[in-house]
Image 1 (cartoon, helix red, strand yellow):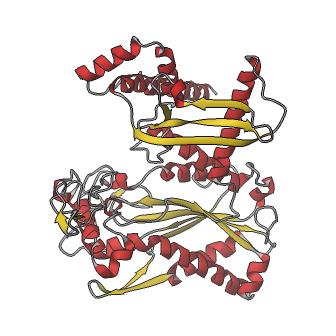
Image 2 (cartoon, helix red, strand yellow):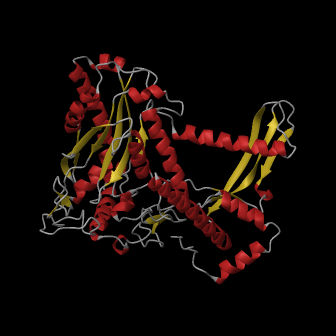
Image 3 (cartoon, one colour):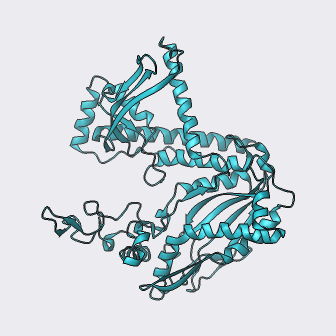
Length: 490
């Protein structure tokens, strides 16, 4: 079924702007620049120039200026990884993440193909319970089971993940756990190396000299608003993926030690406001061997696709907002410094420090309470270093959604460099065909100056961007339909 074209709200200003663009001297140039963004929803607007000069003679070999563009500015993709903010840029981020994870499983991208023979497992670490919640449970055979409230919930029921008794739910513990989840992961990797050394009967130094533990992980939000981690954990030789691990470093060793290390990894937090708390992983831990090929969720391709999918998602899946709640004029403080040196109440937020009142957010009351708890805890002096008020919209989680160890595989930066080099090579081919080949002398001096002037489109440009997104969506649907029909035919 064809997609309907969703254009932004039609206003007289947008119509007039579109007419002005159409009547301009280079409407095709405007259209081409927007199409090159491939549907970016909020491009970065820049003005400036760049010049390539011969390092010895100073001769200008190549130059570009934003004044050459029809609108006098250069539009570049926003690069946002969140699918709710920019589907186009997040799709590119997900593709890069997929290749990064896949390279660490099957080789490629400057990773030795022999890495496929290294022992590796897919680990899932979950958060503990901070109170009973509504859930969708099934028996091992798939038969639905009643929730503790006595109801058979559907998989898309809005009450899933919300507390059975909000008055007894530990919201403070949930926020603090999210805030320290990244540090808890670091302790887990430390204890895993120690447990592996004990398991093999060697010292930790001897283990580190013989085996290197590589990993890549991604954070995923559960419906109750707590993060849990999915990770690829792999044995390498001492030099990383280029060397095989010893024969005694097996998958069974990882399956044995991962649960033990997760139980030992604990973090004690003590403050006057929250008392003493011990943060630990939940009881549900899953460790599965990753297979080179076959069917199911444990193959290289399935694992890479799964990790890439969650690399572009944040807390929005829990029903929270995808924007910060900090009032920008006062930076969340609720007051601004007046010319006389005294502090006055911020007029934008009326002293709350919030860009929009938490009580007015269109979210579930469970999510609203987590946000409110994170905001209040963030303003306690003993917890100020956590900056929970800054990450309240993320329900307290302030770590990276995807990360990896140094020797796991390539990097996102390296993948972007390869893509940039390919585009430069394409541009040089175009110049050569046009009769303007690049001089043989090596260009070593580039002078650039760029200024940020804003984000987004002009009203008329948004119509063109919406049309581009529509055409890309149609092409993607057509390709998927052809692929599906081909598979069905086979």
